[in-house]
Image (cartoon, rainbow, N blue to C red; front, side, top):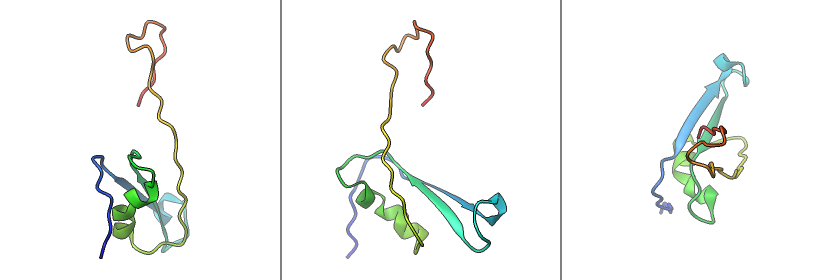
Length: 81
């Protein structure tokens, strides 16, 4: 039985390989990302982990998302999201 957490946000998968000069020939680096909606972000990414299959190692990092306070840009500070 496959146990998934259903979320409302997309999951993105990017892959890099030997041709990008980032890993040994025959290996791939997969970067999986989404916006965290629950207290178990690793479980939210399970569908993506199932797509990429077996892997040597995984690193899970959670980063805060910042939004501008001044949405009128009166202070001439611009943040691209």
